[in-house]
Length: 430
Image 1 (cartoon, rainbow, N blue to C red):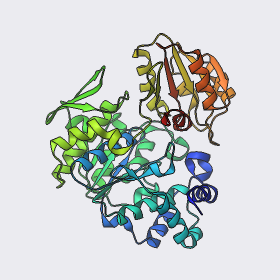
Image 2: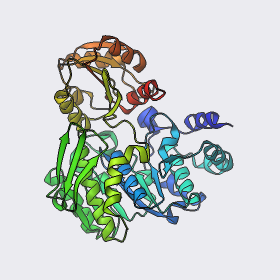
Image 3: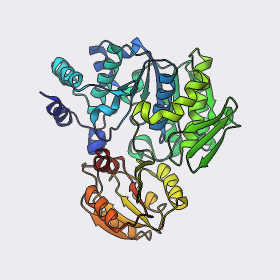
Image 4: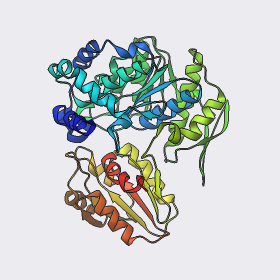
């Protein structure tokens, strides 16, 4: 098989949650542990940092990887989902895994892993772990896929665990209250292992983390308390952060919630220093300023075009899109155009109730089975005063928005990471 055939085989043989939803979800760590046995527990050959949470875990993971890379470490980075190319999930010092390794991995180990019947995520995670070991990384930053306690990645024994925040998402699997969701996310808190909580949330959520940390004797740090003097300025050039030991940190990521991610990351750096990592202040400054170039991060309030300005963001639930909606209203534009689609398993009404009523909407559906039908989305949106037209593909919706937009308008593309994934190829080639 060549690379394209190999990727097609992986999608065909192994159910992928990102594309088909709950039918691909496999609860428990049995498959991951069986696979890990097959491959010789590769993650034990380097240090790891585990990053979970409802939103912001991707940005946090990339920021930490960039900082550690600037500090002189050889850094593996495992994240999901990918936007354009499967290989985005697996990087070493910012470089994506090579195609031939993906092909060789499947051909070499197919007879061993097929009897396990792993999910797409379980197998690609193990591919990443093995690639990192063979590349002899010093440390790997591992992003949780879904939840925490039963997530495939929870077989690692990290130096540090991070939970960015708790919001309503994946409630079918994690519970329908914030404390229940927090309890599942808290599953990545390991015995004697420091845990950083980015956003404390309400007192009930905070207590879940405190109780779990106490149970396993894990030192717990709430970033909001630890970094109480943290300040963030949203300038016309982007974010500028100030903390006790770090003044005038320039943020490369422009998204509306990056101040919270920055506080979490700087707190995590301080904890890593306490447990023996060597990270200079210069590495922190350079990591924040160059994260996009260093790690290839895409889809976080990413500007795709200047005139008219086109911005995309992968925020996809109530917790994340709340910030996006607020940011859209304070941007400078003559008219606002919103290319919008959602997955069919999200709390659509909660999201639509937040979105700006002043924009013209181009309701659409991404090219995955989980995408909500565009006409259904348009009908639901009308109940919240959101007006627009529907389009059967993201490409058609974007073309319509561009035809209607003047040079001083703003086009926003989002609602789902899959919408952004369909949009990016239109702009990346340019």
